[in-house]
Image (cartoon, rainbow, N blue to C red; front, side, top):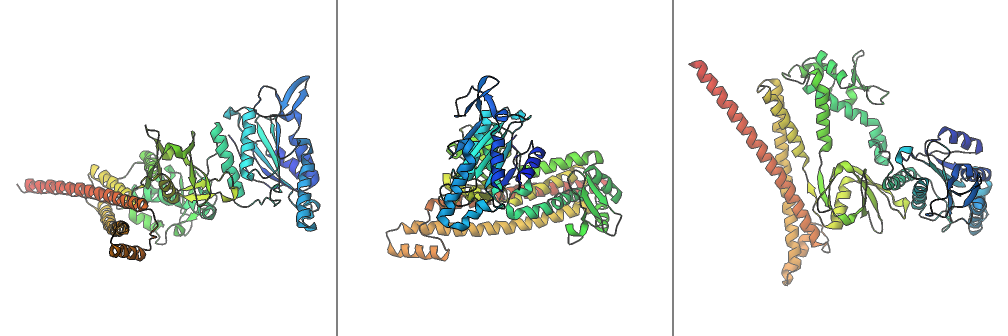
Length: 558
């Protein structure tokens, strides 16, 4: 398992303490003086740490004598004539940059607070079953991609600990442009994803990203609100499956939800998450849906619920169904897949002009077809990290909707969109069937469900009207493109006028419009058919219940 982490270190003593502290983790270290740089380079080149019996000719490692045997030292360089003179060569590059730009740039060498080099440590687990040479190669590929192959570096693979790890020190001065490497907010994320990509392809286990790290602008929000989202999810489930306030509290404990009613406001905390601060009910709902009074009032209307023994497994089942759901499905051709691993598939795609790179689609979102193609299932607001192997500064997060659109543009495949209302209606149907199966066909609990069901059907009608308008507009645009191909000048003029009204560029590929028409048609048809089926079953169920009630009334009257 490859581990990466970012840390700033100033001075030799700090570097030494940090190295001992993080011996099984990867850190990025900024070296701030020539002495630090020299000592760090000497440290990573230590033959006692890097020696390996000569048996692999893949890389040209230097040969050394150890215990009377000729061995390979797992040290290699890039842009450097010899690892032993790396410090001097780094400084020569910096002096050249200073001369080109004036004496002020000499402060890079003279100022002890300026960054001379960056030190990256990649740690691997013994469980990865990778050879030292393979781990060394992962490190080389990682740093080459991160720097675009424009920074001198030394890489050494250490084998003196219980885990094999790479030490990489690269010059902060670009050997091509003579500009400084800027360690920015996105750099650590780029390093993480690049390192994971090569480790994953080589067969090493990789750390999965936590949800709240899916984008910079989203980071703070998710860190603050991820607990709230999960608390609300569990509360909504409990409100449907509790019969009293005491029953609610017991089942809350079963769902690892701590309910504190000691104060004026009810407070919640997830016992199975790293949540240190309680969440007040008023921060979860402006309407006060999770206050003590509202809970007491709401649960009293429930006639049938899951038992304490059932509550956890049923909640986990509901969450699994929700997580497996998707909003978009698209076919990916074999030629678009750079690599397939246990973690998923790495897709080659473009993101803007002259910006080609890769993204990872997790395995749980992929199904491989017999013809070698892949179907991927994604949500609009999922995030994927785009990695440009030549320009790390162009690495960034992409929304699921953007990914699907770009992949569709690249291979011409239609995006199959599952309208979110289908998932909502299906959930209501499951709740309806649950109540009906337990003989609950009237009362407050049943009436509340019917009200929600009818409200959703009204929303679906609005959605269908919206899809109809969109489809009508797309059909109009499609017809206009046909008009552009006409020999009749008046028809061409009319077509141009229509496209202008819809703000559509006449140079747009007609195939793109055709694809949009197909997608909108499919989405409308799928939603319409699902609604029709649900409505038909619902009415049939109601008719049967009505007939049963009428028969019971007749039997009673007799």
